[in-house]
Amino acid sequence: MAILTDSQKKAHDLHRHLSVTANAGSGKTTVLVNRFVDILQHTDARIQELVAITFTDKAASELRRKIAGQIEERIHAASDSATRQRLEESRDQLSFANIGTIHAFCAKLLREHPVEAQVDAAFTVLEGIDQEILEREVLHNCFEDLSRAAPDLVPVETTSALQLALRVLGRRGVERFLRFLLRKREQIDRLSCESGVFSATRADEQIIEDWERLISGEIAAGLDDQRWREVMQRLLAAARGKRSGEVAEMLGRWRDDMSLIEKETLYNQLISVVLTVAGTVNRRDFLG
Image (cartoon, rainbow, N blue to C red; front, top):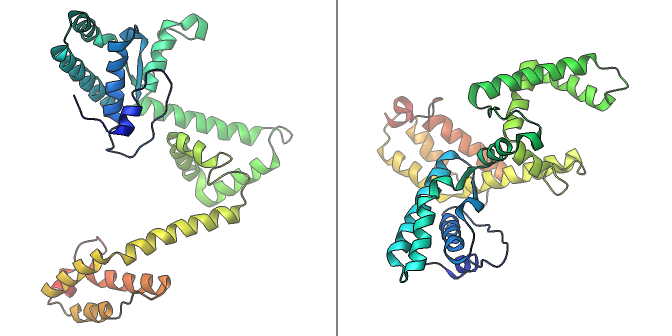
């Protein structure tokens, strides 16, 4: 059994609900696996009564495999026959466990209760090309409906915004952006909520200012990173091209106290000499 940190141990309290937020690689899956098996081993819950939701089918398969491995470990380590029997029953019923994506779980509920949900029990979940075709059809019909709608049914602001987007991006461009937003709708919802970066309560100027500040911060962090200059110096040591001296002169002009604009300008000048348009090292003029 895995050795858990104090924070991970707190997540195994079976007497309360909890939310775990942590970075990638911090052991969230380990905590979930142990909590899942703890519930099976130490409570009266049956495996069909537990639900573990993942983002992808691959993650669900991996989670199921780890839970199966954890159950096997505990079966071999069990000191009494009652615990061993309970774990063996859970292992035998693992194929019926509700471990999967939110789409799969919701589809299962709808198929079990089609009358209450008022859906056809033989429905299928749209994926891949079928989903893309439906999105295109819906967006096309939406544009047609908006263009034909009476002025009193559609706010003037909506019509004006759509017309501006169509003039700037064209119909295909607008549809492409809308399909992208549909695929990222969960992230968009978080960004556009009241406390989000793109909240409707914030002025466009505020959003643009924050966006520029974030971008400038990322650019500054990258330019101030010593590693790219170290790589450039190693390349320069091997360079014999006719413009290698020009690169050496530009690197010699680099100073940490330069403004961000000056650093960006000098960096772009360096890259235009060292790399080709395709992003490969310029062998003809730089390396030689």
